[in-house]
Amino acid sequence: MRTSIYKSISDPKLFKEQLLFWSQHFREIIYLDSNDYPQNYSSYDCVLAIDAFTSIKTDYHNAFEDLKQYQQNTKDWLFGYLSYDVKNDIEQLQSQNFDGLEFPDLYFFQPKKLFLLKGNQLEIQYLNMCDNEVEEDFEEIVESLKTKVEIEALVTIRQRIPKESYLEKVSKVLEHIHQGDIYEANFCMEFFAENATIDPIEKFIKLNEISQPPFAVFFKNNKHFLLSATPERYLRKEGERIISQPIKGTAKRFSDPIEDEKSKIQLALDPKERAENIMITDLVRNDLSRTAQKGSVEVQELCKIYSFLQVHQMISTVTSKLDAQYSVVDVLKTTFPMGSMTGAPKISVMKIIEQLEETKRGLYSGAVGYFTSNGDFDFNVVIRSILYNQEKQYVSFSVGSAITSQSIPENEYEECLLKAKAMREVLS
Image (cartoon, rainbow, N blue to C red; front, side):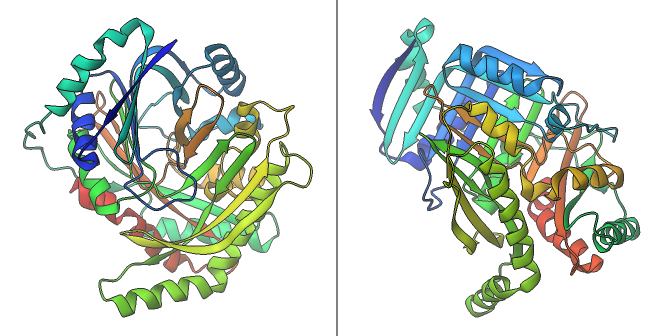
């Protein structure tokens, strides 16, 4: 079904750029870049999938069953996303909030052309129908040059929820916590621009440069774009092993090494941040146990601090072994949406945040990733990301923070602004 060809790449960093520029004339693109971030669980440094041979695009109704059928029938590499709102397929939930982006709830495609880079070894996998194009394409890639960027009109970023209103809403979340309805809620708000024309590739390169996260994504489906600098893995499958790495806990980076180290230590010891992380780790353990072999769920790392260019993050790693009676899509269905983007208990929280947030989350706090031909997968969490509907000229990015009983609304607001910094910088 696919022809594999191997190449040795002398300058992987340059080649990644060339791949990205060359891909731009295709209608469907997913470009994934680990930015050489040191990871324990990683198959590739960079992946490019382009040009849909088949695809699935649907709203949330029956979304997981449709995806399961598609994945099982295709038995090939599939790339795409689950938006946050496919939660409505799993639970009695609905999303009535404003949606300026209008992305489909779920979209996956089977690429005709696939590039997998690890170190300086490149594997090219083309469907047999187009494998005679490999050498010609490769020559074009290595000759690809950066296209000239048109001067863009100024993008005026607005905040969907004003500060006063944000503080009131967080106080309402705190009321629910104090009444015992929930323990923790991830409350989010949108920043947006209307009548905005941006160059997606240029914005992605900027965002990726200032963040250099391990799960960066450039996604294009015709007129819909995702430019993501997410540091968070949602779920990975390697054989029977399932890995989840929720992030909860954020602290500033400083240029002064002593200040920076202090910030890192403060985060590691902060009781509120640790409580947030442990609650979500517990939720992830519970979610994974639903498809796991008995007694196989383990916390490999608890509240470990990882440093990224913009922020320090507290990350836990939870693993399990998949029980053979469950399909790969069942693992997604029983853990989605990821606990780090909801809170706990999940269903109660989702109902409350749906009432208080003013924007439909859509692809923000959903997941982007891929299935391999042998049924493994790797998905990120869509945060620190810019979404763009080119046709509607609508640009959006959202940020959130975890509200617990110890939260101070003013501090949560500041945390949101810290998370918004990179996207704001790129768009202004």
